Image (cartoon, rainbow, N blue to C red; front, side, top):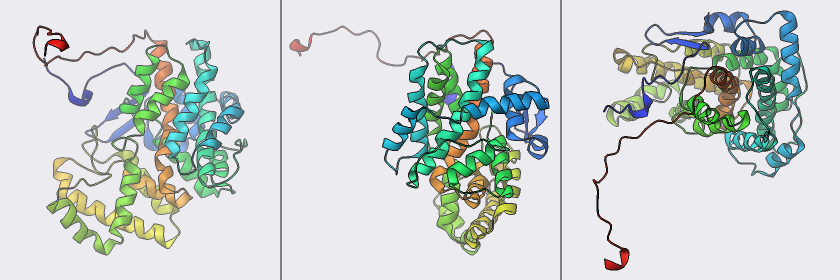
Length: 376
């Protein structure tokens, strides 16, 4: 039998959520091109689209936003748990712990098409409050619930950064939330589906997804790419660094390559423009110019092999320019992807779900006679 290492090209479900053309570099949510959604829709509208299948009317959007905003209020015991964690704890660990804790209130949870969407909206609201407070806790600030505003992105930013957010920053955050919202069934989404296939509750399923995202091969790519740019130092040093580390030492070029895309990741192009438009500080501008120079060298070296920059290449530069520290990048990815997770979870359980139970092909010793230990 053939074993698909890493489950590459193994199909585990039908989906009406996300389609990817890896050869042409096209990403669509519910049939809509990602470029059109980012340009003309808000995160709340796209979240509704993913959960319900159609873009909302004004009234549907108002009702949905109200449901999400109710989730801005975190249970007191969750805030106590966040406050009790070390200030230097990874934001993603705080996120995972908070969601595992909230599963404690789900002892009577039952999957139902009538209630799943309401629970999903609550979870989207909780996610913003948890991630915002993870950042506040790391800054030594008192925890607080998000305040409703004109947008999810603004409410999140102003709580997380403890200041008023500029309109340009809100727009970058809103677009980033859309860009990272879903990407079919990578490791974290698969982990969520494995958990929910056992009829576990949504909070536990999200905790499983976060645990998978936490690994550096999945969620940590934006942090790795940004750290790489900072380590190089300036555009003038790119060629020497590239020759020594990538050409001679054969090290991995962070932010390059994707399991699905064989050309430019369409999300990367949008993040690059966002980063270019939002950077103001000299430090951020230097990082951006370094990344652009490194992109040129990387494409020269790997383009013939269909290896190009992915969405994580420039996203960290945009996040940093908005005001987030590098160690928050993966949590920001998770905040966005939570909507994709709940959409996949709902879709899976509204079909004819089966518990996921793959097999392992045995290749150990053949039958052996047991000699009691005392006879050895």
